[in-house]
Length: 343
Image (cartoon, rainbow, N blue to C red; front, side):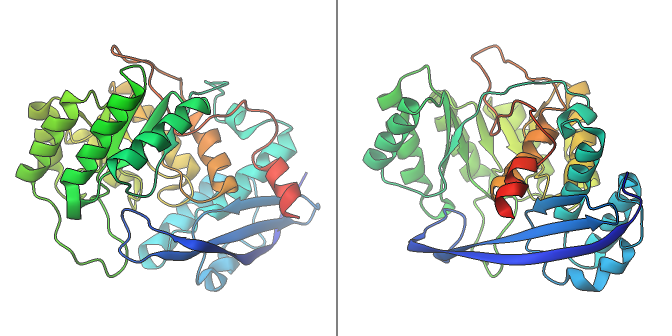
């Protein structure tokens, strides 16, 4: 059994994108896709893998973990939280530690987390804004590929076009397909100083989306506007989702306590880590809310989110099956197959 962490290695990878990816929430076209592969090594030869955050600047903090017991994950989570206050959010380290725990125990991390779900429905999440005809075609392609739900981004710079794309998708796919919409207003990319849509404008959008049968409206307002999100929940008759890039679990718990969210979505390798995401999930579910973690990194980040998500029960709502942005069968320790391919 491993007793000490001997090293934490970070490898930076870059995939060129041609043509560039035009993310609806980013004013700068993305000409490449970056990934950081984290390897946590132990003195017994067990290596854990994680990915997600860029891990820039982590080298100065590695000594807080080297020499420690890799299975003392609660201790490491607290250490990562102290670093996150001063620097970045190095949650791929925690994911790699859970990978080690899964290998040592011979169990999937989802099982170590409680093993509440063995499978989940999934949805296709579209990152670019397209015109209505193109969006309808993309949605039909997703349906033909087996997806029962989709999520469509709406750019705040041209919200009317985004709503029109949702309308075209609904007309093309019919009522059986679950549709969610995302305004991406909770947080901003570095340097994005453009004005946010205010509550009145978002309320009008929410009214139109409700008429189109949209399951939830994601991140409709800046994260600090909890009162505005609660108003949308109370008055617009549409579910509100958010929290994918929250910096702390306390931020998410505060949003739930304020009545701002129906669906809480922390990213396990970008926001609050796997352990804290599970805690938030339990609080959300006990309060009658939904938990579906955000994931927008790579295969390893997706696996971390899957194991965090399957620790909580799958759920249904009154109007139709609820889709999650993950699916997993719990087979194998966290990231084992992906870790082998990475090597």
